[in-house]
Image (cartoon, rainbow, N blue to C red; front, side, top):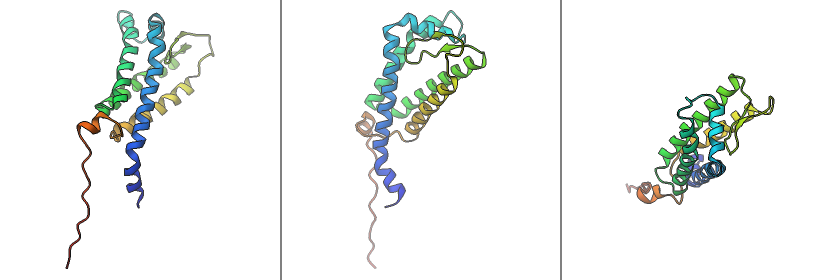
Length: 170
């Protein structure tokens, strides 16, 4: 059995684990923000990236978007699209961390609740960027290999059955 054959056999299970991990991350990110929407707005404002007119809207809607994407991933529905949405979200969050760091801001990212300005030196932007790189790797894996076990995708469009080799008698 080749590596490709083994990977083909285990890939749907790996994609399931990645899909569930991504959903769990989003749920753990959304719940504290949903419990304290004003703090979520403060976290968005701290980046000083968006016009003040839309900061309350983004701070309010972000946890709902995270939760909706988590549910999509849990169901395994339109998984490649969900992975694409995750990657766009992570690109935005990564840009935000790089922006805050480049501007000399000292903020708590607010990724898993909280957020806002903090004391100088209380942030660890390189660690945040490593975390984002890991999250991006998860999204890329699922974007490339979206087929997973226990997904609505596999129920709606089952994987094609590989042709068995045909023996030819001479």
